[in-house]
Picture 1 (cartoon, rainbow, N blue to C red):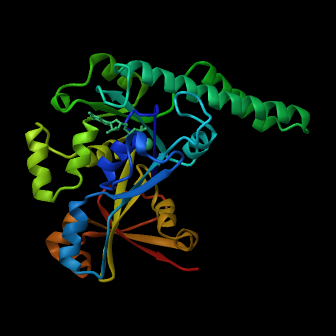
Picture 2 (cartoon, rainbow, N blue to C red; picture 1 turned 90 degrees about the vertical axis):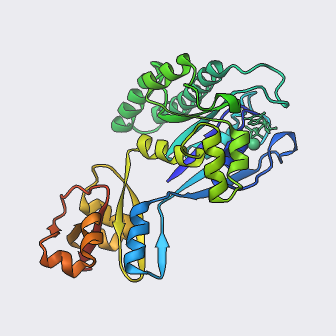
Picture 3 (spheres, rainbow, N blue to C red; picture 1 turned 120 degrees about the vertical axis):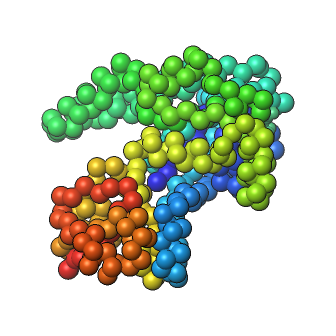
Length: 327
Ligand SMILES: Nc1nc2c(ncn2[C@@H]2O[C@H](COP(=O)(O)OP(=O)(O)O)[C@@H](O)[C@H]2O)c(=O)[nH]1
Ligand SMILES: [Mg+2]
C-alpha cells in the first residue's frame, strides 16, 4: 500500500514525511531538488502482538504502508507539479495533499489553505484531462477501439464535472491549534468531497517521531492529543482505502495482511501467493480472540471454533486464516 505526499513547494511535505516515518529527510530551502523520499511505516496491531506472545514465532510482521514524498524536478508549475511528480503520483494507491495553515519562515505569503486545496484539485483534473484527450486523439487515428473510447469519454465527463480524486488532506497548523477543530470551511469541503482530513503540527510531530515511546506519549498528551500524527495518518489511510487486516499465525511467523474490505477468501489468498489463489481448496478460519482464549489451533478445532470456508467467504478484520491449496 503506497501513499504519495503532494502539495505546493514549501507546504511541509517533507516535514510531514519525517513526522510519519521517523526518518530525517532534508526540509526547507536546503533540501536537494528532485530527490524522492521513500519510507515504510509499520501499522501497530495489538492482535499481532497477542498472537506473537502465544506462538513465539521466528518473525513478527506488521502491515506496512509506504509513504512517497516526490520532489519536483524543477521546470514545472509554481505548484510543484511537474512531469516527474505527476508520474510519481500515478504509482500510488492514494494521495495525501499537505496543506500549509501555519506561518513559516520559508514562505513569504500568509497561509491560504482552502486556495491550496482548490488549486491542486484543479491542476490534477487538468493533468488527467490532458492525458485522456491525448489518448482519445491517438485512438481516432488508429483502428476503432470502441470499448476504450467509450471508457475514456466516461472519464472525461467525470473530469469535466470537476470531480476530484479520493485523497487525504494533511493540514499543517500551528502547534497551539492541533487539538482544536479544523477550520469549518476545510472540514465541510473534506466531508463533501469524501476526503480524509488529518490536522497536525508537522514541525512538532517531526520532533516527536524522534523520541522514545514514553516521551512520545508525554508530548502528545501535552498537545492535547491521544495519538501521534503517525497513528492518526494510519487510521485515516485505512479508512480512506477501506482496508482491513487478515492475520496468519504459526511458529514461523505471525503477520497482518492489509486487504480491501469485502474481499473473498479466494482473492485474499492471492495476497499471500498467486499459487495459493490458483490452487485454492479451502480456508480454515479462526476468530483471533478465540485463538488467544483457547491457546491453540487444535483446541479451537475441538471446541468447534474453526470454520472451513470456501472461495466466496468474505474475510473479516481479525480473521486468523490458514489456506489449504494444491498446485
Ligand atoms: N513553524 C513551522 N514551520 C514548518 C512547519 N511545517 C513545515 N515547516 C517549515 O516549512 C519549510 C518547508 O517545509 P518542507 O517540509 O521542506 O516543505 P516541502 O517543500 O513541501 O517538502 C521548512 O523550513 C519547515 O521547517 C510547521 O508546522 N511549523
Ligand atoms: Mg520537500
